[in-house]
Picture 1 (cartoon, one colour):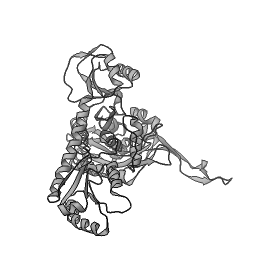
Picture 2: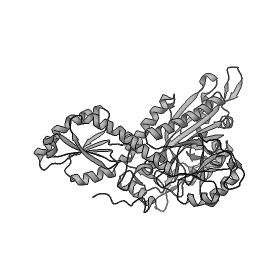
Picture 3: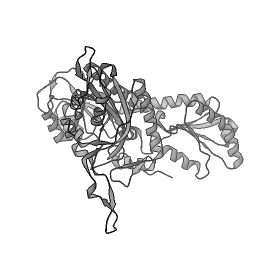
Length: 490
């Protein structure tokens, strides 16, 4: 049987790594810190891309593509931005190789040094805003709503597949607006798009809020985020949307002529999600037997396994199942009929359970006689024998129910592991057990840093739905007007 992954309770980190490997999602590459996303894993990412891309286009955005390489001087133009990314940048210094004279292989040609070093894209604000200068002259050119799907490089020392790799895939939106109000509305709108995707497609409940100054994106005036809870009680930042103010417009001199015939700098935003969402999907739902995938993102939503003793039985089952396959496909449901003879049905059951296929059907000779089929759902691990007639409608309803059930389970888990704490002693004790801690904070970076140093917990966000509540900071004892969300995070 193809499984034997560690349990979450024994070693959550090892469970995660082994599940990715055994479910054939991805693997480490020959390049340190980089990953190979395998076909099954990439099929999930493609579904994520497709759904998000449709949502972006519905909100008026179009796709474009910008260079992978960024001149070093561009990063110097926005001081806080370069400070935030300087330690993570990969730098290209030469443009040519040559054969070593001693025949040992290729070496960098010392005479091929670039006049200006190029940075391998860690994020694209600088190269995009240098381009926007040529695209924007008048208020008639605004708003400019651009997204790109790309890869980026951030030099990571400690990596983990999907969660933190040196190179990863993502999308990054970059928009320009005539007014501050428009840009702020865009920042919030795109965060809401991410939240909708996380909850309706990934079945992951999220908290929407604003980052503190310490956690803000380098070069932004405000950063909004969605935070999700994983099954080990840690937080994962699942998406961010940044209000850039006029910082990058001023750095790259992007001005426009207003309706009043005056020159002004445009207002900007940027926002993005990455293959980190794959890690969130795995850690939020999966169990000790393998992946648990919400139907909307499952590469195979339904698998049908025939159980037969001879070719005649297989032909009869195939003939019975063929119209069902056609009807499900016509309804937009991805279905697989696994009639391969390489493995026995029991092996197939375990394999599709490992891969998180939401619905499994099994049909044998007795089912043919009785006009029935066995139907199993991956999320609850339940199965029942039902009549074959009316199966397409039953499966459609079942997939919807599984999608909602997975979300409800994750939301209940978050609620059960969210705690209100009023003293630092309570905080220190509870943070060791994991979960989200709602606690008062005095609003200072110094206190935030001190709590992080003492407990490794950070303020994940100041939630939008924060209720006004007079209190005192758990650490400093100074006045506080509301609770924020603390957690240890990935």
